[in-house]
Length: 266
Image 1 (tube, rainbow, N blue to C red):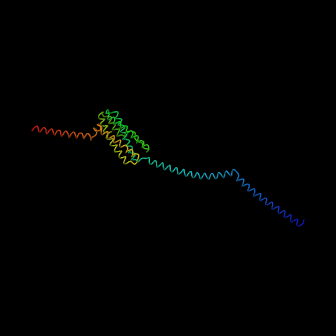
Image 2: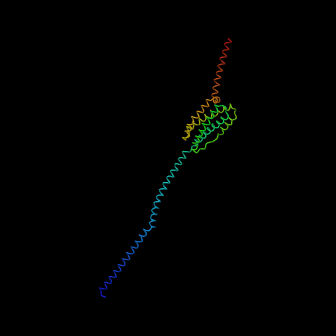
Image 3: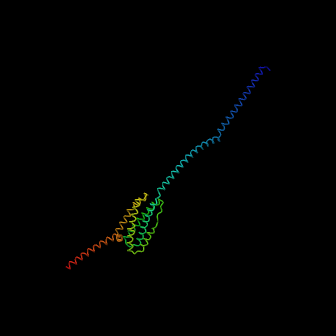
């Protein structure tokens, strides 16, 4: 073999090795690229990627929703506390409301008793008006009480029960006088003073307005009782006035008689 032939053979083998190496490298690169492309295109990878993005969005949305819910809950609690504070009465207002209720109940119950026991049409008519007007007044008061979470009494207190028991034992004539004196005059004067105090001192606006509106009706009842014969007879001032006038007339009549007797003697 000549030197030239040997050199060509060696160069051919070197070129072959080089070409083979390049082919191996190219094949390796192609294989890796194909694998990565296959993974990227696979449904599992796409689903994982989508789920990952969706999860991130959900977390963000949940965070926003949670913050909104927390704010709404705080606002609702604040509104509830404000409503509770506005709805509740002070101890003084509650006591005044209970006293007004007792006044209404007393007028209703004594009015019913008078309608049964009295034979005087004027007294019976007055008693019916007391039952009707104070029943309405009590109904209006109960509506306010319910909105303030207050339980009102449903029957007369011990004081009024004792007074009714005494009334029930009286004769027809005495009953009329005592009923008009007690329920017609004294109780309405007390109720007027109570309502006046409530209209000025109550902290609750609804209770104050109720007292202001009810005073007019109570004053009307008082005037009716004062104008009635039974009320005037039972009233100390009317009786005293009549007695005083009568006494003065008798004294004048006696003085005139004495003067007339003296003239005749002369």
